[in-house]
Length: 315
Image (tube, rainbow, N blue to C red; front, top):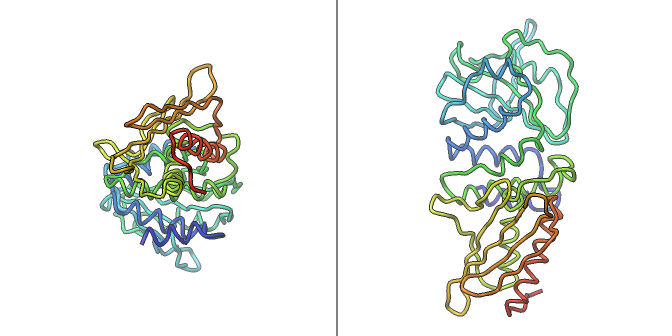
């Protein structure tokens, strides 16, 4: 299902809000540990300390549901609603996420989630529960009716994007699909303008790795795979350096192409490409930091490397 959805998302005008939340739900539901890390990433930047403290620590495993139906009760009427994402542990802990891109929230929509309470989301009446809004733009709501202090506030996509790209799933293929999903929406600026964001090298490669794999595959005319380490991590590194490896066969021999993004202290960023076996190593100085510019420059650097390595890139 996820591959079919990703193909639709990558089509023109395919990166819609419903498809984003549906794909996120499918991938997170397959890995309860990754779902817990997703919740931690959101809570780290949630602005309301009181609600975060009342919610308590994130359990080690969370169940993910999308389009979670609940009933919002009022003094005069009861309304059927749907929460974009619910992340729960048994019946004792729950985080409700209303996720939007360009569309605005209504104050009533969020107050309904707060008013509904834990029981509406299949939790015990005394369960710890909180609500946050994940969005591309800041919204002004005024004061909420929130006597139980469940409102965590607004979290912006670009404030958590690096942590979301860094999520690791038990199945490396899910990690690749997750990063592919985020990359499409980032590339189309559905998470907001990212021109001022200067991400870590690892985040750059998590964003660009899958499309670069396809680029290499097209140029070489042979299957290319992303290689992970023993734990299945595809992109490795951190704040100063990040690297990813691609495997393929050439003339009956196994080859590994390594791409490394560098952010040295007090020096411009750089990119290094090398191949094993082989003695070709090229370094590209003053490499772009911004994600979209980095991806374009990476494809150009790969073409230069493959031509230098004696392979005529296919157009």
